[in-house]
Image (cartoon, rainbow, N blue to C red; front, side, top):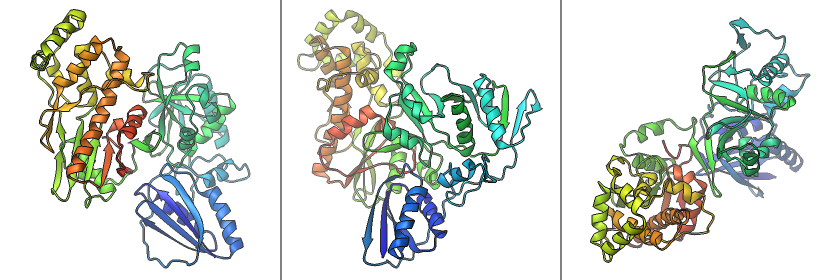
Length: 537
């Protein structure tokens, strides 16, 4: 009997294949492993009874990974002959079920040992002793269980405990946006944040990522909290796992950690920090930070001065797309927005549109006057919104130095008196906003089109004069921008057929932006993302 596993593993790293190999090497069976694109194949050849046993063991031993989207399992007629070689993965792992079996067994010599070596996931450490310094005196303990009990007690007594790079304190209240919280008991996560089964499961994955959660309305109301988001992390190595067990036993479900030099106790041991941070949209997991990617990609990234093109080239490399024609949307809240086309037919990359920000508000007003009915519109706006009109004329927009989405929206926001257009749009409750005019000046050109800021502002003025409220108008600005990008793609594809769309930049990982983008991309393009590389550096 031959059993085939087909894993959909969207990463170029060898973590999963290494772990599978480590697990199966201990079992008396015949197997092979190989990768093809985003799929990893495992074939097991054995008697049916043994295969069923191994399959059950795999389901228990194989850790969940954020890269493992799904897998299929089927009996196949033949055991394929393959000659596949791979480089064993060397990335430092968090821990797996095999690690926990050792450290949680009170009869094991590894009981509560946070530095256990694991032959399955590869977790390893040569540390034999931890030093705790309190008032420059060593903190003694007789065994690791006692050590973690004492450490948890100190935190419960509101002591500030520095562990390597972070200072840990008992969580009492939120003080700033995106604070870092270690959750010791995931069953209590919904007490403070908006729950998500998918996000909670991902916290426990092999990579132990940081994930941003929305603070829930009940907590905010009961605690007079104005903070909206918090970064949550599950214990990311065995040390924090064992500490969390003891903290949870003391009913401490959340611990705040931050970079600080204000502490009461100091603990040091050799450790490799896991800097993985992800965002979860309805269709994809995106890396905002990731320490563990192929560092040769950095060299490729550094070859380009423009961040959008550097990101595009890395994405093409990760997905092996250099023989394809691909349009890239680089949607950023911090850096220059860009839409570019790569194709071997043009031997490189070319921009589809450029955003040249006007030098002054007066320049925009003069441009509006030249439009049909523009002068009358401007006079009406001045009469009804005199304060906004005068404030905008006194605002220096020449200081806007980038073409990020926030900067682009700052232009109409300045004139219409709407602060933080993107934030207002994301919090709008209506299903859609008004269709704002996102136009280009040179309509006959296929590439290097220039964006028309005059019509962008003029259409917003018309809607504000018609009585559209600021939140609804803000929603229209963001929503229409995304549909503008989609229309550009369709125009290019009609004249220069492309093989797919790639998406990068931090806004791609924003749930609000991503949701509208998926609705806007009406043509059935194949979508590509960065695999291991962060979506924006």
